[in-house]
Every structure is written in structure tokens, then in C-alpha cells.
Amino acid sequence: MTAEQLKAETVTLLQDLGLKEYEARSFLTLTQLSTGTAKQISEASEVPRTRVYDAVRVLESKGLVEVQHSSPQQFRSVSIEEATAILRQQYDTRIDSLQSHLEALDPQPEGENNDRMQEVWALSGHDGIESRTHTLLEDANSEIVLLVVEEELLTEALYDRLHDAVDRGVDVIIGGQTDAIIAKLGTELPSVKVFETELDWLLGPTSNDEIAISRLLLVDRTTLLVSSFYPDADPDESHEQAVFANGLENGIVVLLRRIISSGRLPVVNPVR
Image (cartoon, rainbow, N blue to C red; front, side, top):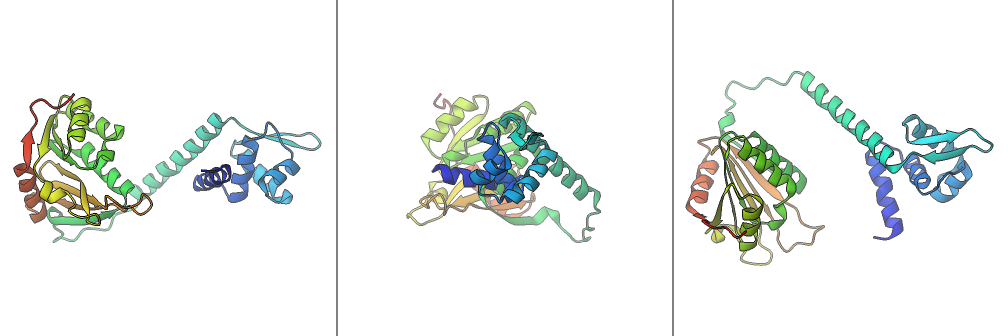
């Protein structure tokens, strides 16, 4: 990534956190200067000089910029650590407010015939699927069965939630399709049951353009998450999809529960 690309991405991130474009560009410029006048900021950021004053005034009100009332006025940004702390607090505050507002609104009443025991939903996008996976792990009460096919899913966040589940007394059974995955699981989660699978016919792609399963998660024998992806797709083209099903008598849950059970082979001494 070039310096210009890095600057452009930084401006975009600042905009995502609530700053307008001129504010973001002015702030970024000040982080690279010890101090600067409106003229210097304008020349370095390509923000019109008349708009620099407006941008800096907003940045000052947010606690991101300090002003020295000299002639001409001098401006400087607070430290990067302080700025990120301020932006994080503002972002967290907005999220907390959003949550309280959503919870305060009365939900639509569910129909009397709404059978939540037979749910099947589709999810799209890696971040959303990862978030749902972590939520299911956090909500597990009795049992977690997780089969990991894609090694990149083995993150510290995943390990933390599995350790928390073990601490809560949840029975955790986790497996992998490859020796490398099984070895990592055995090392990171020595107290859980590790298994290898004989489900290659279900999980592995047989051609370069075929969709592959990336994870199978069964929680409390009633909630199922299955995600898939194109293994050979370019990173920018990869698009993870998932099916989320709920219900003890849900046909999809029953089927996958039996398939997972039939494909589990215990690993007595996983590689450490």
C-alpha cells in the first residue's frame, strides 16, 4: 500500500467514525505536523483555506485539536493515543445509545402460530457469520459441537469463547478436517474433546470452483450454523454464506446432528 493509499484509507476510517471529509483530512494533516497554521493545513490537505477554520473548530469541539490564539493562529492535534481514545468513547457511546433506543421501542407482537422451533435463516458475509458463531458459543448451556474446516477460523476470539464455555461447565467437542487443525486444537484447547472427521464427502470440494464448507456448529443439540465459501476465490471475491437453523425437531438440525455424530472419530492423543 502506497503512502497516498494509506492516507486515503485513514481518511475513510475517520469518516466512518463520524468526521466529515474536510475534518478528517485536516486532522490527518495535523497528526503529521507538530503545529500548523490554516494556510499550512490547507496546502498539505488540499482543503480550501476558508473551510479549514470550520473543520478545525469542529475538531476542537470534539477534543481532537488544540488552538493557540496567536497571529496567525496555530493548531495541533492531540496525541494519537488520546485521539483514538476519544473516538472510541464517542463510538461506544453511540452504540450504547442505539441499543437502549432499540430496546425501548415496543417490539411487534408475534403471531400466536409463530413456531420458533422451526426456524431456518440465511446469513451472508464473514463478519456477520463470525459474530453469530461467537454469540451462539456464548449462549451455549449444555453442549457445543464445532467442526472447523477452514484453518483461518481458529482465532484468539474463538479460543476465548470456547475456554469460557468450558469454565461454565459446557461440554465442548471440537474437531478438524486436517491434521494441522487438529494439532492446533489440541494445543490451544487441551481440556476439550478433540475429534477428527470422516466427512470428507460432505466437506471437501471436488473441483476448483465448488463451494466448500468452512464450519459446522451445533449448540445444545437444537441450534445449527453451517457456513460455506469458495476456497480458490481471490480474497476480494470470497463471499461466505451460512444457514442458521433452530429447533429440536427441525429437519435440518436433526439431519446434520446425525451426520456429525456418524462422522466423529475421537483423537485419544491429539498432536501437541
